[in-house]
Image (tube, rainbow, N blue to C red; front, top):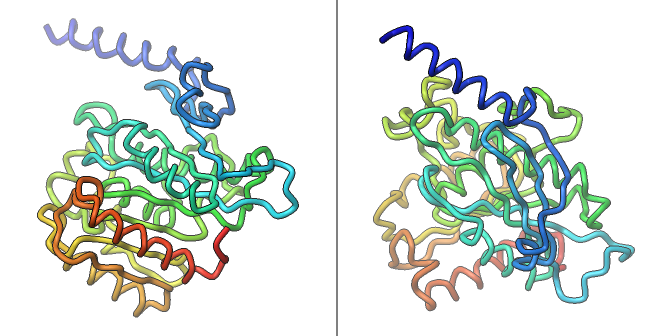
Length: 294
């Protein structure tokens, strides 16, 4: 029985390797079929992994001109879902809203942790890959490589923060000379403290949760961080976010918290009134960033 199990596991490993041509995860630039591209202004695969190819969906601002003299700022958005679920569609609404503000809004897909073979560390590396890819191919879309925002909600907020705080979690095949650190981070009810048993299980023993927790790894020299969260969040304690922002400020970083009165964890998606408050606060964050509204 042990021998049979060993053979099965080895065959599984061979299959996973062969699905990617024996290569480690790496960046690619391949257009997605027209059927998928119809959802967005443009769609492509940005990364190939042993678990399949990952997509990016682009949403252009009104009057978008790829030859405009001044390049556009961009936002790479990651959806939430507890790191174990999530769809591209969940990231598209915020990407569209940022496009309405004048940004190039990008919804980035990432792998999902599965308790077996895909670690949440892989997700963090996917997020870093997405920002690196955006900077590497910025000229293709007329994106300003110095005005790239990583944005995410809930677990996606953690991934957005990871691009700024944990750039060392990267694929061996990628070019470290192209930075995966964004120029700012926006989060909506983002997970900041992941030093817990749940996250530990998702790591599959590849890292300790405290080493992946933004709350426990604050340092100076981080890009500006702007966070929005409902005060009565019923899943992620508002106090963690509040404490995290204070720690960032004490370390000399630019960080601001935009509290939303009342609400729940999902209120910015489910309650139109709270969503409107969040949108106004987002305009305030963009203004405070000092880039000027696109």
